[in-house]
Amino acid sequence: MKKRAISPLIAAALLAVMVAAPAQSAAGGTTVTVFDPVGDTTKIGAPGTTPAFLDIIRVEVSKQSQSFEFSMTLAAPVPDQPVLPKQVKEFEWFWPIDTDPATFPFGFPRAPGLAFPPEFLLAVAWDGIDYSAFVIDRPPNLERWHARDHAGRHQCRATVTAVVDVTTLDDPASFGFSGYTRAWFGPRGTEGFAFADVVGNPGVFHPWP
Image (cartoon, rainbow, N blue to C red; front, side, top):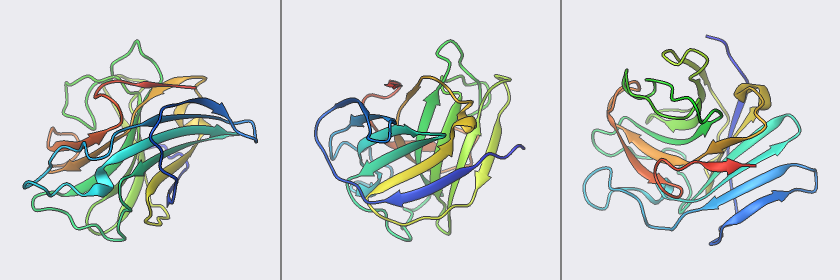
């Protein structure tokens, strides 16, 4: 598997309650921000067990020079060592990235034969022992996939952030994105998961820039 650079970080951020249009930073980068209500998570275990650090309140995507930064602000800080509920094998904070709306790649990380839009998925995950970060590259063969796993530096605060080189995503001029949190009960490549939250509506991709 080919490897591409990814630097996962978790850092503090401000909270907000309005939708922001694309903005130009002082350094010339473009930032798009999407907001989500607090307290709208889906239960992933027994009643009341979905932790607030899986509750998304803001997702932001920005480009600076030769890198993209994806961030996800949460309703509570992510602990150094989150406790996984019974039967949950992994927590995941991830961004699906749709660089070609005309294609629907099959399979991984979902079950074989299932098609869904994003060409890339960028994620930070906690398996009960360690954090990891990875990019799942689903093109160019729409029936195959390439996962690139990378250990990363993590600081547990209120925002999960992942920075990737533009070439990791094939340097797109524009793309659609979203932000999800989920719990895995089974391995990747199956339907053994439950979404905890999504920014906006499920299946909707927000445009960047």
